[in-house]
Amino acid sequence: MTELGVRPGDRIATLAWNKNGHLEIYYVLACIGVICHTINLGRHPDQIAFIINDNEVTHLFFDTTFAPLINAVSARSSSVQGCYNPTGPIPVQLMENPVNDYETRLRESPRLMTGRNWMRTRQRR
Image 1 (cartoon, rainbow, N blue to C red):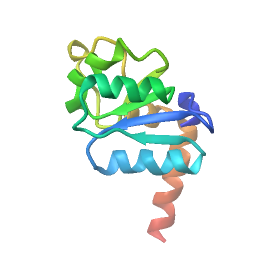
Image 2 (cartoon, rainbow, N blue to C red):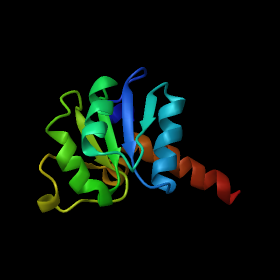
Image 3 (cartoon, rainbow, N blue to C red):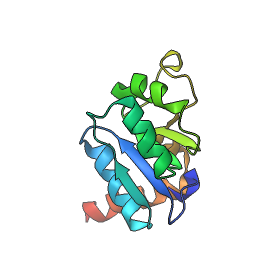
Image 4 (cartoon, rainbow, N blue to C red):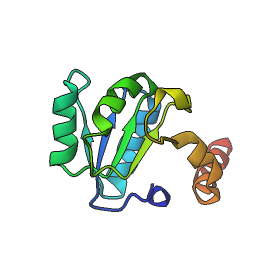
């Protein structure tokens, strides 16, 4: 996360289904001292924009299925510095603003993969 620009004390928002990627992000953020706002999926776009702005959210993690909702909110969310999708790449035509693919960034980072390889090695013993 720190390689993505996330720092202890930052405020992050997630708008995602309860799947393994969302759970992983939730726990990683807690371990580095980040405040995580899990946004209620039933909120109106105006309410989501208010939550993001009021809490000064710097990074937003969201599921691909919420791309239209993120498009509706992103123009009104001035504090967000980066958007990430933990569920895979999003077709460019779906998004108005750039979105980083979380899993791709994870694979491309040699420092992050070291931890995952270490975990796999430990499990084989």
